[in-house]
Length: 596
Image: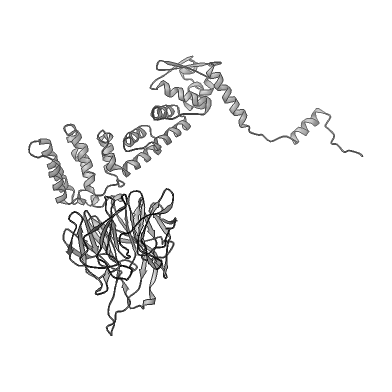
């Protein structure tokens, strides 16, 4: 059997032609690069073929010029140009720590670097000097990860000095988000005047009121008033005095200074008050900072237009946002599932909506709104479907309390663990009820007020739940029994707004509970009767939105409830109600939340 074989070329010319046609494409081999780098490292360690000595402080380092030139544009320019160091055997470098240069040399020969709290800043300075971008990036990332209340100002100033924009932005953002805590640190008092003014001028300071900004500026001045008194006008100029009530400022100054003896205190107090008078009409200072402009979110609910039949109602998925400064409404993204009678709470600067009902079906689903992305997303479902529940939050968890669970009233409390994305039954209610008002107190306690029992009888019951001890405390009854009552809190006063009962239908009644004295008092009624309204307090003003009311027909029978478009506001200082901004969609049994 004949075998056909390709004949090899016999002449050199043919061989070259053959090879040019059948050549292999270039291939990379990482193993070779690693082997060369490893061998260079061995030569360096053994001080073989080294052709330059680097003097840093009292320590001498031996190295290879070509390795240094390949790893750093600084050394590349030094060894490939006409600089005097090009011909020198020994080169002295100033302004460096020997340990930092040792680490850089190790990186040149291995591609590995160890960054720690002890060496990060010196190493970053060296990497910046020698233009070693990889090490610079490692150090910057490390600094961002180490940001804390105690070091963020120092890191900010360091990043500014070295033009590390990424670290500078991260540190600045951290400072603004934690300014109330940062001002307690030692670094705060050592801030340069210009940097302090930069911070106080920012729109992004996370402060509750402008009085806090005034307080921060004053603390910095008082830390060294003898030296800093000449800076009073400069440091106070970013304070938005028109947003501070005159009586608040006067009270603050009186409480801050002993005006009997200290001439510095007297002078500072007088100047601050003069600045207030001078700046209070400046329009440029009248708008709250972006991070203190509070937005009210009205979420889903139920709507029925006036004159419509019982069957004409609609469960909503739409969301509206009200800007309390601009006094304007904005349409926001819908929630994924239409619902009414749901629980709403703010947790970790996000809005959570749990349970509710839609077309007589009770939900166990939970949705979360992230204001930074403007999107809704689902999280783990509750263990039980609930509607007309209470949803409260402390610093660590969400709690779903009571409400209807199917055809029964829920006796359980569920806790949401955000790290596990899981709901866990953690306790029991003290009173079976639904459609109650609920609110959280800053001390971590939850207050539940009113509602109705299994038979639909409205309650006066007021109770307080401690999620840490899992204990309930029975408090003094509310004067007016009612369900579908809305509740909010200002300082240590809880306001129970509207609601309904069998005898009077929708109510305009408003009652105030004092936590300190365990007592109730009646305040002026609302302008309209409202049940199932939503209420929230913003900057010590109470806003009430929507709700339903009933009106009699021609033959004396009550018609199907109608939902309000309107809102109204209560000012505790004047003890008066005024008409507020109307919503785009009339609704009741909705969710309400406040976010910056």
